[in-house]
Image (cartoon, one colour):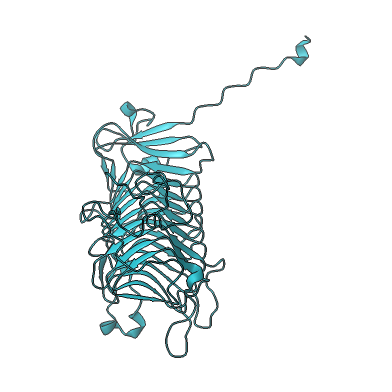
Length: 435
């Protein structure tokens, strides 16, 4: 072969770097490329150049009172990964003066095995995680003590919040006393969110969410496991919600003249296979239509929210003020479809006066009141018979057993195949005759 046709072999691509951070034994003057040469601070870690496939590892047992910022982008198949190394307790990132403890402004970032916030002793100033980039993923983290455990920004799409533990994110970010400050402050309280979702196309699944409830001047109590505001096409499934003021509330922003302040609207959010209970919980699901139900039908400033789907959820709320499914503000079938749920809520199982049988079917509903457009299609109005020793599983004789008509998922909240007993249950759990 002629020499002029010979080419040198291509150089092997460099492995993406892995960096280590150790708050006890580390030193920011180190190279950070091994446990023995770890950095000490998150400031130093945040200054590193992370490339697709890079890992940033925090030593277990460590505590950092600093903000962690990841601004670089990973890519599909090669995300930037933040994780723990070593043995012992999860690495702790706790409060500073920064708005969030962890800020993910890049795309394709995955975060595992951190504790974010320390309740009462280093909470995050506002949010545990603030997510501004796309295609970011949180898994197996413990998040506590914030006003918003996770905040998904309106520009953040395709976020996945999977298999995390949210505990007592119970701080109000706004809590004003209208009796002292005036009527302009009568409806502005906000906070105590486990997750506050302003973005689109998120998946929120398999999380354990507890204690998002706080005193409020406006509402007595406030808080939510999953609050969706101006977000669309979010899929919320297979979560356990205990003692949060409300499991989920949805809203948008509309001016008094009816002009939307949410350019792409708020629509098409789906909730399925979630379990909601706890004596402190006052609400299962709250959404709304376009006009207040009062004289003159003024515009509802947080509506309308369109085409919310609520199916195969189990709700057991004994609080005397509890309402299971609420769709107010002139809500109609255009705003809510509810099917195959099992609901007990002491005050009202359902409040949705404009929702008809076309969008209300095959639910088991019980409570002191039921207020919908009609009785629905195939609904059963009696106690769902939840097992008190095994929350929200069904006891023998429950009318939820076999009531369902459509298999919307593959497995229930306990990992059991839908239809394993030959039928489809209403609610989040398939019936099992033996434990």
